[in-house]
Image (cartoon, rainbow, N blue to C red; front, side):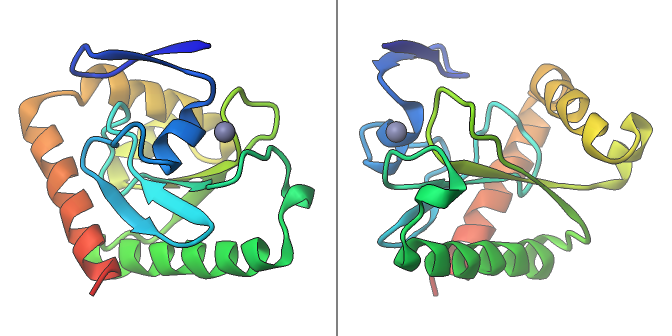
Length: 161
Ligand SMILES: [Zn+2]
């Protein structure tokens, strides 16, 4: 079991955080952005960057080659839909995609938007972790959190009309 502590101080013990989120045992703060038969998209508000989306499979799998045909098709469609909404709703020009298989959670892809303020952390893959940590440690203020929640709301509306 893994103990998860939320930004509001609440803790919960789960086998796999992705299972808990995609099955609805844990409701992500801000809610579900988009859900299909095979995938579940939400923002981890512990990293308060507007439009940062985590796309997780519903099945407890780890690796890309474990996806069945229906999941592969759905994955690309959902990923493209999310990307389009990031562009149309939030004006996001570039996104970094991050996905690793040796995680304690199951299959999930991070979609990390680039903003002008991120340039000071450099570019390419080495900038991703510092940007996430900066967001978690320094952008946790009320004003930014409200913007993040509003962005989640706008994306959810655009993706579910
Ligand atoms: Zn799982």
